[in-house]
Length: 111
Image (tube, rainbow, N blue to C red; front, top):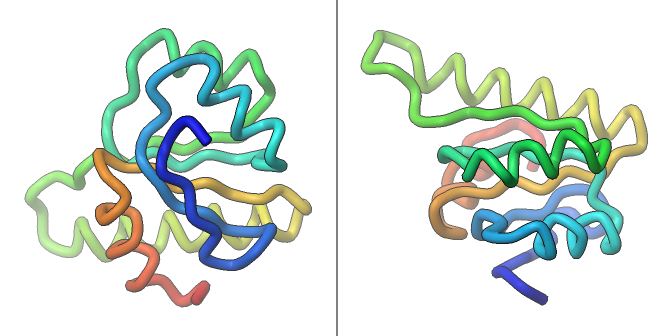
């Protein structure tokens, strides 16, 4: 396993560190991931790899300092997860470290 990766809901929702290489993206694909949510900026080369590999993906970098911005981000995350699960697409949420997605997943209604 190239990066930290933990299933939160086995076979449906995983969290972990950001992919650092094209091989990490390949590993996610080989392990059944079909959609990626990034909570921090990804390297441009990895964005291209994600797109060309056919992943659905959503970038949710830190919300602007606006009233209710964090709540809006959690709602967007929750909606994306539910849509992808309904489409039979397991989701991987990555952040600067594995604690970042874990804390956000804890706030969603998906758990």
